[in-house]
Length: 315
Ligand code: ZN
Image 1: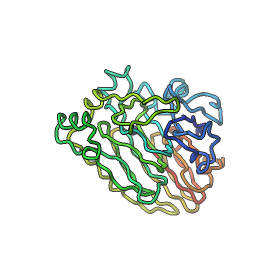
Image 2: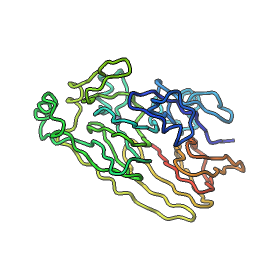
Image 3: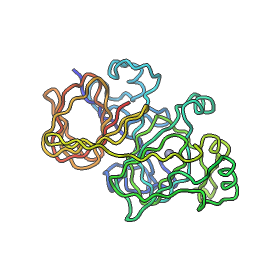
């Protein structure tokens, strides 16, 4: 009998992290500089573990290898997606990620990293860094070398509920006081461009990767405005944010009992607000803010019950 796969997150200490993952999501975080919750992960740097059912105790990467039928016998060697929640208690470094071919050649066969953000919460009037103003690679290099960050970096205003698509090659940074759910390719490669000359907990500057960053940055900046599509259903609203070759991402807002079908794909599901239950094959699984699960291929019809918001993704 197919069951949903509930996952135990992995937490990462970061210089810019805080305590919001405990205060907002109720997680038992390891330190008061906890920056990342790797909620649905098969990445070797922090795979999440299955919590329930016949596969309890296995990590997601083990399950991917040993039970490919749960994922529709995929051709990809590694689980392609990674869902995180990020607590930017202070500004993150300005960074850029490589695309697949560059990462494969330069980062031991890693995937590239296209990512996207759903803004869970942020300070009033918060902004983030998204793109740059250079017209050529030469100009990009020049402004970086001279440290002309105000001229180079583009800032955009953000508010809770906003969604941003961040293709590989986009210079970006989350700014102080932002809580984000990130859906990304399963990759842990970041090229740091600028770190505000900060020192880490041991007093060291963090390494920059300027040559690689300049190599992979898209010039000129390509704007990727997301126009959400909203569909009303019985007791639910489905908002489609993005359908790309890497992933599709949705928000499901449920008020009452709503029926969904998973078709022929596996779904990654994160509860971002409220509580309720998942009902499938006569079983009722309680859900609360901060629950994460995968619905395997073949789940077909299921119900979501309660006043709950979800971020859902698939490849
Ligand atoms: Zn990033």
